[in-house]
Image (tube, rainbow, N blue to C red; front, side, top):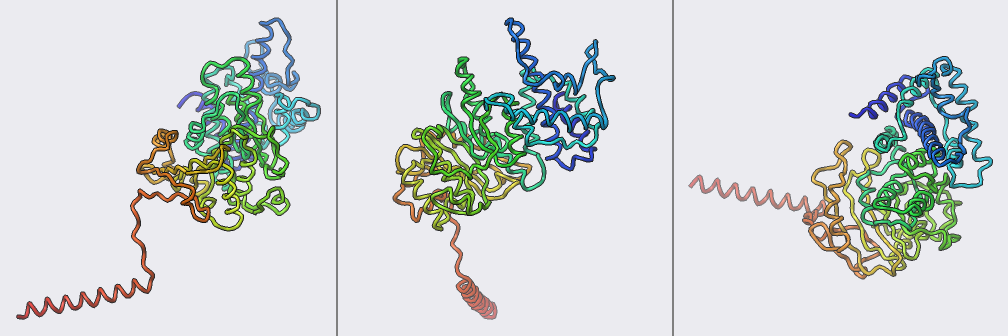
Length: 485
């Protein structure tokens, strides 16, 4: 285990003793805002150093008295913690709750540039609170986090991975799954869709930001010009997140991964009337795992041509409307979306097949989203290049049953990614012509799989047992008669 990982574990152990921390979700939130402010201080320090070398002045986002180096861990002349000026106990929690957080939250009051770091900071601290109750506990946490160096690329990379793990394990509560999609699934979707610099990427249910971050990593490979790098960080990634905690975690996670100005907003995607969406608002690439199994009020349903309480059907309509003419989408959907035949589901699938090109459906095995959900899911791929003519299916069959402790791995998708472009048929893949689809049932039915023996009706099973018993009795009688001869 690395030194950085040990320090994060040390912070978690410290926080477990605090009265304000009642679970993994609480300590993840606490670690997040502390990490973010240390990161921001190091980030601004590096920008100030660059400005000094170029003989210009850097204008800090955070005023001097509110910077990490002033309130969190002030230093003495030798560079050690200045114990005399480092507040602790009730004085520290009072300062954070009554001065620091209100100051940071106020950034949104006078910001005109919504892509600025100042706007992001104001948004984050508008939705987060300090849940560390004990000032002495907070002092210990600050002292450990202060030893991290966010000006080191290696440490930043490792921290981003550790932060992902924190988000993944953000609690045993049922809603923790809102924030996390398995990395193997995300990477597969990004690799297959292959977004490129110059395109915009959208996720209407951002969560912890996994899809946008993976797309950024994918798109930032190679030698990019300064202009391309600027576009990638400021004008490429877009999305919404409904929950306050999800929004905060997602934005922080993206900034820690290098996306300086994510265009992510705290709002319910489904409250937008999709009839008002124009081409200029649409995106080249859509990657998402929207919440399913939820219900929306009739007021929200009015925003969609096909009204339904099922969030998965509303999100699907939204994503269809948000896709540019040359765009491509990859969306996780529950199994029910593909086979359900009620009116709302059929109408949406009809429009999808007739006005979009549904070219691929990846059938995922049971257990991909454990422990958060046991629902079987699929990944549906479509673009706006005409109507659907045929669908290439791939059934993913991992070498073992998926469980919480034996999750899906990226290697399991190797064959899918190899066959994806060519749409070749194999034991796990097959092609279905759209005219062969009945009642808009587009669920995966592998013709190459061994067919299960059809079960007889109960009455026929009983009759079969009686017949077999009679034949067995006759056979026994016959054997006995032979023995008596």
